[in-house]
Length: 265
Image (tube, rainbow, N blue to C red; front, top):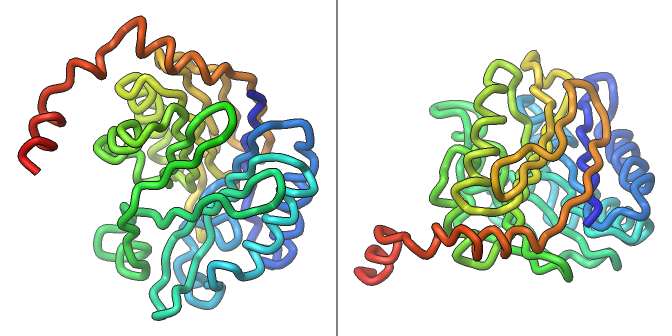
C-alpha cells in the first residue's frame, strides 16, 4: 500500500473555510495513493479550546462535505483527521471521519480519551464509547486519536476486532515528542501491527506542535518519519506483514489476562 500522511500546519491567520479548501487541495495532490491521513482537529487547532464551540458543526457539516468530495476526486481512502462535532443534543465530540474512494463515509469515530485533565477537551467535549475499525481491501484499520495513544487497552481491543493497521490522528505537543515516538513504537510491537501516526505542525493557541508523523512496522521498526514543519510523508508498506509477523512470533496467542477477563464477563 501507498500511504500519504499530511502533516498539516494550523496557521492562525487562516480562516477555517480557507483551511478546509487547503486541506482538500492537499488531499487531491495525493492521487495515486491508497490511503491518505490528516491530523487531529486541523480545522481549529487541537489546543485552541476557545474556538471549539464557535466552530463546532454537525456530523455531515462542511468538513464532512468537502472531505467526501476530496476523497472521491483523488480516488483514495481518506482518514480525514478530526473536527469538532456538535451532536443533536448539543454535546461536542472530537470526531474522526473515514471516506471511501467513492466519497462515501465508511466510519466516524468519537475520541474515547479526552485530554486536559480538568480543563480543555476533557471538560468541553463528550467521550466516545465505541471502538471503530474500517475494512479496506488490503487491511483492516483501527482508529485512534492523539491521547488515545497512551491507553494500550484500546489498541488491544482494536486488534481483537481484527485491526492490522492502527491509525492515529494527533495534535501532539512538541514538549512531549519523545513520548509520541516511544508510544507509537510500543503500540506497534505489542500488537504486532502497523502504526501510522500523523501529527500536525505549527503552533495551536501558543502550543508548539511536535510534527514528526511516523510509520512503524509490526516489529517496531520506523519505516518513515517526518520533520517538524508542514509536509507530506509518503511510505510504501505491505499490510500482509502484520499477519506474517503474528504467525512467525505468535505472542498474541499467549495472552492470559485478557482471555480470563473475557471469560469472567
